[in-house]
Image (cartoon, rainbow, N blue to C red; front, side):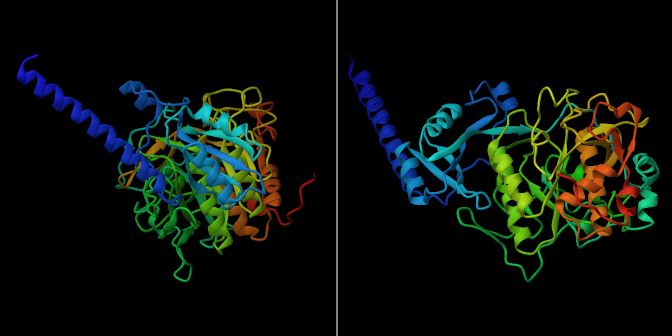
Length: 465
């Protein structure tokens, strides 16, 4: 070997040894990090990212994080011992569901295998991968609509659901808060800015024992774990406009409930992807704010998941106990949810109502999921004009639009019946439909929502169990 080659060989070996030593030190530092530190990418990989880059993910649609529910007697110290044994890190405890935790696997192992490892432990009630959620990008959206002139005449759905008659009684109340569990909201949009929830000055900022203090002026961003839920995708802004766009001050459309307060709960990123764990954290935040005095009555969910997540189910049950009602889209794959369940629409929980979509002729939209056992009612969801990013307006289609319509009606009903319980609100909405031939055998009520019926009822009765 020549002298130069020998020197190059020695130098290469030294570089490798230094790299190994550096990696070892990084691992030691990671182990020393306190459990309250949450390490998460600002833009998590999605399945599309994997397809484009060729980089392998773990379980399809998950990141290397698992949601583990420990049994009641297991302490935080016990949990930390278990996670340390597996070279994992406790990321967050979900206060609204005692024992439910988000755990990061430092070895980047397969998330399904990590969950299976935890399920074998006697201390664990259940464990599951942190499934990925994708909003429906396949439903056709119309071109952006310029906002020079009023476009309220284009809101065809209002005549179908008797909005004018409902507004003769109430246009909603700013004292009622609706959460939009989605991609955030463009809270500076001229059609929304007057109706965005703002934390009262006397209320302390949100504090999570693991994630720290968050200045939640207008809601919560679980993607970045901060108080800025600005929308970078547009899906949440569209939902917010349908629910509660303000009618005056330069807005070119009206929401179903134009005087409601909208709380953005962001967990979906700019690419339209999010994770169950972040949705759980956002709902946990909403429950905390409800218990802190915010009159949060409804959460709108315009997305669906094929996998049944027990963590998501548990946090929605916790929200039920806190008095929060969920309006959820049935799904936009044109399939029967009774045969192929979609979640959270298919959970059998008393605070959920699942919504299919109808079109201009009051027929089930071609893309809408249905299910006479698992989908309760329908609402207009095709070619719905609503708010869009950049202070614009856009036609949108999907069961997410239908769910937003019903969420708006729910808040109108609550302004007329402020003392209604979750069970009473659900019963009222189920009774406030127009029976339609095209919905018979497709949704349990056989009907499409009617806003006038929801606000005109003089007496709220308790549902039969």
